Amino acid sequence: KTATAGEFVGFFTAAFLLPKPIRQLSDANSEILRGLAAAEMLFEVLDEPVELNQGRYELERCQGLIEFKNLSFSYPESTIPALHNINLTIEPGKTIALVGASGSGKSTLINLLPRFYDYSVGEILIDGVNINQYSLESLRKQIAVVTQNVTLFNATVAENIAYGILGGADRTKIVQAAEDAYAMGFINNLPQGLDTEIGENGVKLSGGQRQRLALARALLKDAPILILDEATSALDTESERYIQAALNRLIQGRTTIVVAHRLSTIENADLILVMEKGQIIEQGTHLELLGREGAYTRLHTMQFGEAKEESRTV
Figure (cartoon, rainbow, N blue to C red):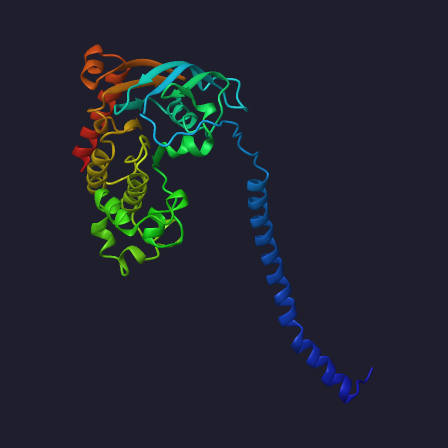
């Protein structure tokens, strides 16, 4: 069939204009997929059950006496107890270290204290009051937590130190907390100091710098109970030295529970608990446990041997 000049021009014009809308359709598909992924994560959070907050007991600042009485706990999806018949008293101002293999129940025990999980067998008391009787706000006000994985936000250094209930803290207190965490040295070298934005999850900072900001948060909160969950396990030697110095300052006058991987960091603890399969199998000071030549001694010997092997390799 012979086409007219108008039909010929129209065909080529349409052929020329079609590719761009087709490409835009493929781009729309990727946008839709990203939106669906974001919506899935959003609704996962929205569908989380609301935490039970039936307690009415309010306390400005506790003394820091912690008691675990006949405590047992199992995760909902497991039939094997994560903790079994834990009995422990931590006096105010003392430092307690938890050691043991992965899966022994160390992290479970410390996660029950601020009620990240609710137990049903036994009791946990702070200053003689069951933690279920505290309001969640009052309970968590008493506790500062520093973990290996630090959560930071795409905001300034100052806003990352003073966030949540600490928001609006006095600038001088933020500076003092950063100095006590040995963080002002690197903060002063940032382009805008405390007002420097550090990127999503602190991507512009090193691991040691992020960890020092987490310690500054804990210092600013000034809670009477401190939980340290392997706060130095992923750091290099130089960063660990700064963090350890900050930790020594942070634990002063606080009831402290330390979950430790490196036994060298908890040798000065007032009491060391060795956990295995959800139970406390040994407890004592560093020297007492070494003298018993039990589970703690085996852990210590194994780590000491690994350290010597690494030094030979280097």
